[in-house]
Image (cartoon, rainbow, N blue to C red; front, side, top):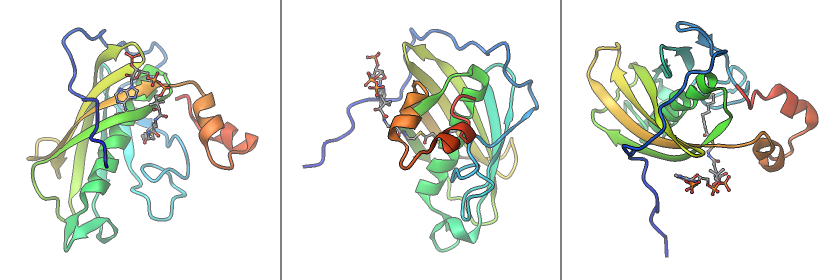
Amino acid sequence: MIEPPVRSAAHRADLDPPERHPEAPAPGTVLPSHYADCVGCGPNHPTGLRMVTTAGPDVTVTGTFTVTAAHQGAPGLAHGGVLATALDEVLGGLSWLLRKPMVTGRLETDYIRPVPVGTTLALAARCVGFSGRRMYAKGQGRLDTPDGPIAIRAAAVFVVVGVEHFTEHGADMTAEQVHDYEVNP
Ligand SMILES: CCCCCCCC(=O)SCCNC(=O)CCNC(=O)[C@H](O)C(C)(C)COP(=O)(O)OP(=O)(O)OC[C@H]1O[C@@H](n2cnc3c(N)ncnc32)[C@H](O)[C@@H]1OP(=O)(O)O
């Protein structure tokens, strides 16, 4: 039997407000790839999304993702899982502004409009607040421009972890790779 998910990413009213870290990159700063082989942002990934994200004001991040033929699910249309990856990446970018390592615990996605090959999605993410180690966030993707029609929306919970999460669980993780992997943006 397959068990259904037991948690929700819908945020509650009693969250602690997000605090932009004093050393967060200034608004407008292009965020570096956190890991060169990342499927979302890594420049070395052979078939990755090659996303570029930018720090916004408060605890917000924007990003773009151009849908190519490599990202199709149906003919000429983006695969929903690939779109969820793009949302995961821009939401994960909030960790640069919070200066806390965190991993995706739950990602809920609404698919509102089809996203054709050739579209450049304008993505945005905002931290809503914290409950203990849980960081609640929401995100969206608009077709082609930051004021284009909304195609996808997300609500997410990220869980703050220690660096040992990556060193203990990463397959074949050598000391050198851990050093190169920016787990603590
Ligand atoms: C710049 C960076 C961009 C990166 C973008 C991409 C990000 C990713 O894709 S990360 C990879 C995908 N995610 C993962 O692999 C995570 C796998 N899961 C895990 O490792 C663990 O379940 C983990 C770390 C989330 C939680 O485990 P653990 O550290 O033992 O914490 P645990 O004690 O169970 O939970 C801590 C709190 O988080 C909550 N929590 C844990 N899991 C979830 C979840 N899935 N959804 C919602 N809340 C959760 C718990 O309820 C608990 O809350 P509270 O303290 O209020 O009771």
